[in-house]
Image (cartoon, rainbow, N blue to C red; front, top):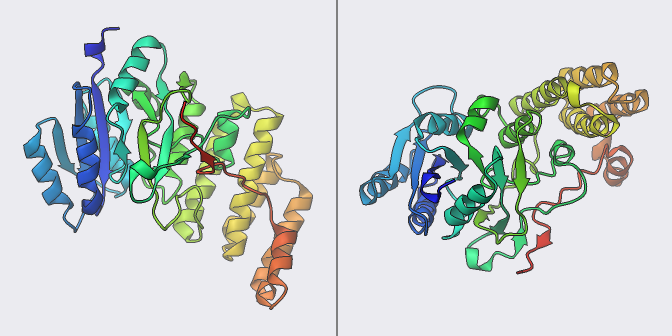
Length: 339
């Protein structure tokens, strides 16, 4: 494969990130690789974003800017619009507050040239708060556990910007699911991992992207309590379990059970009874939850309903007794050791 044929589209959804978008686009302009376009899709920003987009599109005509022109709102829709507008054969989904290392595109293009048989290629990412020069921790690292199992346990092996995708592979899995209130990225990667796409991780290479951390946690780590978010979690659990029937084995079933317990307890904790009972019923029918767990969930629901968990001195005890599972995420816990 000729290097010049690797045309890369960088798709950037944006909502009120005007303060960070300039730095993100600067990181694109600094690339040592020239065969790219950046497609910024705005989600109805009310800050300085549109002015930033206009200024940068004038700086370089490879930066193309659009406004979301259909419902619902959200990053998934903006990313899908970006895919539709893109002209490159290979796609990177870059968040509007994250940064590319100046060698990112050249490293990824060279890797595609060496391993052209894949549908997507995954690269290491560093996490930072204020200055990427101070980034010390990897987003995540390799383990012996299958990637699909880890995503089901919310231990996201890579973040959205970590891979570069063959455009045809994105079209094959239908892009991002629109309308989900949370876990959109988890859902997207689960779709990829259950659709027989071929991929490789290149965690031996130098990290080529920087994930900006904010005070509010990521969707994979944050507290999920609103009804739309709980419904999204339930939908993701059920839809991916159904899609994974041909792949099902004891370990995969166990991983779905961990996700089901998390969804059920999240709903019980916030007194969303219908969702709790629906998930428990689904889990029993599909043998991913035990009767013992269901009984435990019912007791926990009664404890929360009676506010017993708020009695001084009992809160910690109840939490220790009813903690459904430890979602032991590795995200951000591993220092980067330079090769």
